[in-house]
Image 1 (spheres, rainbow, N blue to C red):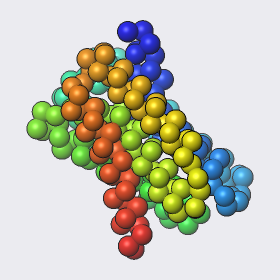
Image 2: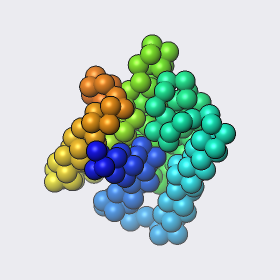
Image 3: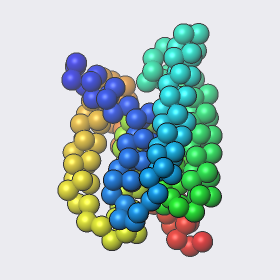
Image 4: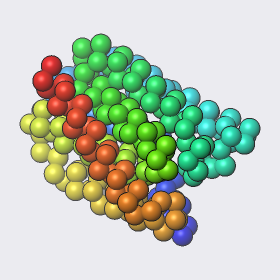
Length: 202
């Protein structure tokens, strides 16, 4: 049980945007001006990690949520809307930079899966944001590797193994039903493919 809690906290959805961003800059074969790269990482760190973390602490302090994992359906609604806004704001900013437009798709994809997540709350379905987050990262790396013609099979295999650990941990903690864990993972991947397909058509 302690190991499952560790996995859930270590691979919390809030960590994946910055993980994906760092992987992007480590793997991209093109040269990007380093000061620009550092600015992007700092802005994303503040926008997707520090600010949401501060907000989650406030929400918990004022008892608007019982847990940082937002267990109940009602306590998920406002934070999900906030994360949707952050994802699309950052995605739009990155896209307009004309330097890291592929990275912008990562955030548009996360915004899309969060929209799916929010809509499903009204059907009393609480998909796993943990598996949606790693599914989104895997989906992004698939089209990233296709776009730049990179062989990322080892990294993707490792992420699939980690996704299994995350899924089993969420189930062991009884945070989700099996269908919610699977649906989160599938929607995470599909959302990334959808935004890449739209980008490719445009």
